[in-house]
Length: 96
Image 1 (cartoon, rainbow, N blue to C red):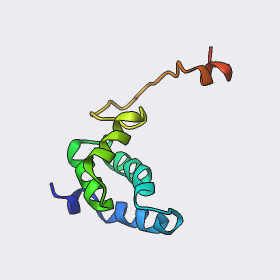
Image 2 (spheres, one colour):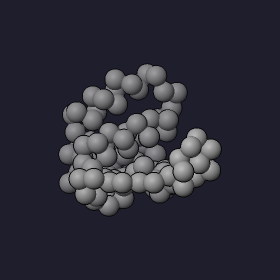
Image 3 (tube, helix red, strand yellow):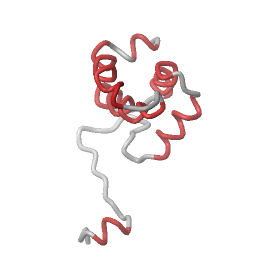
Image 4 (tube, helix red, strand yellow):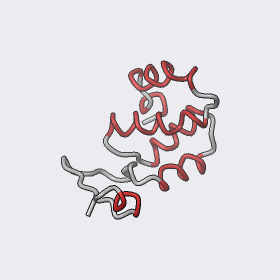
């Protein structure tokens, strides 16, 4: 599946609509990754490559973002994806 097929018209339209509100192509990376995950359910290596090509960023930058944020699924998940926050910030807000 090529980049044009992965980043379809629906995703392109969503990104183009917000492009002018972001200062750089790199700043569009997280919204693009969210759109890809919304469309496909997870972010595969091919989707990372497509995002890299679409925003003219090195693949390593895209991988850094995907692997850093736990909100991006790097493999398929089921219908219900339960995550628990064990961070001190959640605890301070009463997540006991």
